Length: 628
Image (cartoon, rainbow, N blue to C red; front, side, top):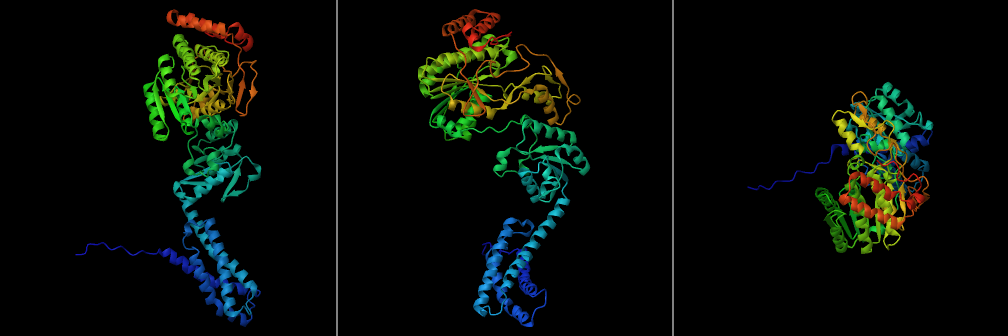
């Protein structure tokens, strides 16, 4: 028995034949209608009536063949769009020209009115395109009416238009765009994709209530921090859920769609403008070279490794003291960048043996020193650990880089190194001075990059607040007026690489951190973003400033002469004149005290190291005061 399964015959969709029948019907309507219009709406001499009927089969045959071959039946009426209209226009032009040529060959156009062909083409365009778009509009209206939720779009610009178009294209997503609000008065009363602009953004809460809106979509991609905070506060006042589109790069890439909408996060509230980097210059300093990153598994170090890996270094050395962090970042980089060569090194920057062996074995051209202890309150009572790691770890690594002849060494510092009031800031200030001191006598270019807090880094306030909110509160803030500078981790790392590309040695680069933000504001907004009410659902308690903590941080000393660089987000200062002999004496005393001294003596010696007469004279009398 023949068990070979026969293939079922290919069936042509019934819809295609229906569309073909429709188009074959409108061809004679357009042809006869052209004659009718040509002769003053029906006052047609009998001879021309007979002529139009006599020539109709030729027109029908030519235009029918043209329409079929030009793909008028590939599209689906339900999804008729601008490309379909362009296809119809091309088919009408070719079909009309083809029928004119055929009639010329048959009858030499003896008495056929020339205007009949123009009118025939215009009528065909209406008769072919009109029903298609009417059908789509009818089907869309029926589906939109059944959508479960109504949406208000904030922003009637390009992003808003693209979002509405996507919502209208696929009603199955369950949202029906009902109206826009926009601050541009010229847009009020206009319609975009059939959706009206009904009010300004300030009227958002009232508009939501009046129209019965279920959800608000924020489609503003270039708002500054203050403008974005205002929009989010208006959305919060409306009492409706809201979502936001990502940044301008997604609009440029054409990725604005319902799938791109996401909940608002704290980065949106800070609203920093996108940073433009000179990746060509950065790549020139990374590609094909050996790069070593210390603290490679930390928040800053791991992001540096990700950005460096994209630039195709010859070798990327991952130096990390935490076994788990080293394992995690190595596994991620091998998965995401399988073509680059990695050298994971488990070690401490204060271990001279492992540092020397690593630099000898891998010969790094560039060292990015991100390894450091950074938790301010904890280090206030752990001065020895902070000094050993942040000061002497930097000294060990810097000396080895000098001996190995590395091209550049970049120290990642902090705003807490300016007028330090705590042990952590003082150790980073000492590390800055150390790098400037060694730069004066080394072939290696020693650079420092100084910036404030980064959002979401390990041990920072944002993860702490999120954990406290998840636990039901309270959220603890040290002081209602305490402020900090913030930027995202990718932004900070990109600017670090940019500073490294433009540095020549000895500079301290200061990143533009924007405006400082009140920690109380961050706490309140994180509570609101979680769907709770600050002070009601989640209490906020003020615990008082912790040891070594300041109400506000500074990015540079008052008398540091900041100058512009080629990048608008990076400033630089020549730094501090260093009395090398005195500073080395201070370091020697610190080493001795690390072996035998108590915490108080270490703290005093550390303060003396960063406020020696030569340093204070150049850096200003505010340097190094108030440290606990």
